Amino acid sequence: MFVRFAAVALIAASAGAGTMYLATNEAGAEYQPHMRAALGSLQSARNSLNAATADKGGHRVKAMEFVNAAIDQVNRGIAYDNTH
Image 1 (cartoon, rainbow, N blue to C red):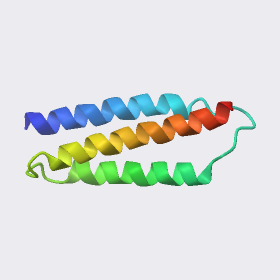
Image 2 (spheres, rainbow, N blue to C red; image 1 turned 30 degrees about the vertical axis):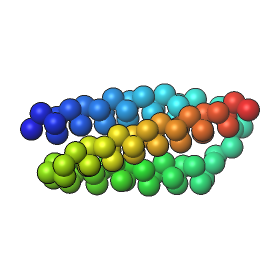
Image 3 (cartoon, rainbow, N blue to C red; image 1 turned 45 degrees about the vertical axis):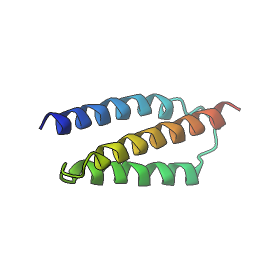
Image 4 (tube, rainbow, N blue to C red; image 1 turned 90 degrees about the horizontal axis):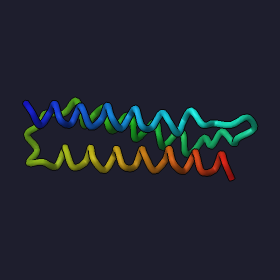
């Protein structure tokens, strides 16, 4: 139960951090449909992993960490492109 709670807390913290990058979309910045599509797919994967049962030998939690890291990198890529 604690592992599931910790995973949910990690996801919530990552989601909050990701909104920082999405909020920096400047006027005239490129929409970046492929990056945003990837972001949507990753968020969907995160939701599916979160809904899965926890008895996966730690692999579900590790996958969630990788998906959260990928979401962060996509957000950073969008933010970078919007400023360069």
